[in-house]
Length: 332
Image (cartoon, rainbow, N blue to C red; front, side, top):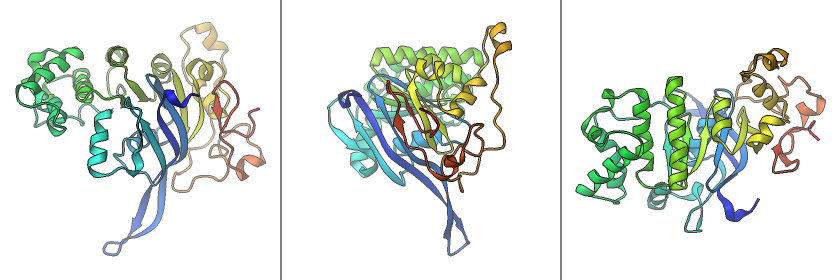
C-alpha cells in the first residue's frame, strides 16, 4: 500500500477503561479492554467499513481516533491535504482544536446527539463560530447552504430538533459534520436508529456527499449488507481486536477468519434456492468479558476449528496476499 494515499494510519491502538473501587480512596482493580491493540490504514477518498458484534469496541475505536476518548497507548497518524502528518494521540489544547476542523463525527442516535434547546441553525452554525470560520450573516448563509446540500428546506433553520423525524434529524447531524469542510468523517452507526425505508436515503446521501466533497469515511455498522453496499474495504472486529481486513468483494466472497465466516453466514440471501442450501454457522457460548479476555486468540473459546495453539499463542497479524490481512493460526 502506498503511504502517499493513506489518510489515517492506526498503529497498535489501545483503550482500557479503569474499574475502580472505594468511595473516598478510589483504587483501580482492573480495566475494561475495549480496544486492545488494533492496526489498520484508511486510504484517502475511500469508505472503510468496521463491523462486529455489539460491545466489541467499534464505537470506542471511532471515538479514540478522533480523540473524544484519549488512547491508553498506540498511535493515530493523520495526513491531511496539506501533506503534513500529525500523531493525534500526542496533540492537546489548541493544536488538537485546529485538527478537529479536518475530522468530524456523525453520531448513532439522532434523537440524543442534537441539543433540544438550540435551533437547527444554531446547531449547524456553532462549529463555524467556534472555529472562527464565519460570523454574522455569513453563518446564516452557510447554514442555509448546508441544509440544501443534505436535502432539507433552508427555512427549517429556525426550528427545533423535536419538530423533525429521525431521518431529518440525522440529515441535520450530517450537515453539522460537513460545516467545517472536513477531510475525514467517522460515521458511528448513522442508520441503526432509523426506519429501514429511511436508511437507504441516508446512505445514498452519504455516498453523494463523498463524491461531491472528496470525503473519507470510517463507517461503523451492524448491517453487513449495508456495509457491503457502501464500503470499499471492511475490517472485522471481535472483543477489542481486528481479526480480518480486506477489500469488500474479497472479504464477502472469500472470508478467511472463522469469525468472519460465522458473521457472513448470518446475512440473509434474497434467492430462496440459495438460502435453502446455505449452511449457517452457529457459534457456541457467549462473548467473553473484555475485563478478562481469553489468552492466545480471543476467538478460540467459540471457534469451531480451534486447536491447542489457539489458546496459547496470540496469532500474528499478517497479509496473506492482495492486501487481505488476517489474524488466525489456521489460515494459510
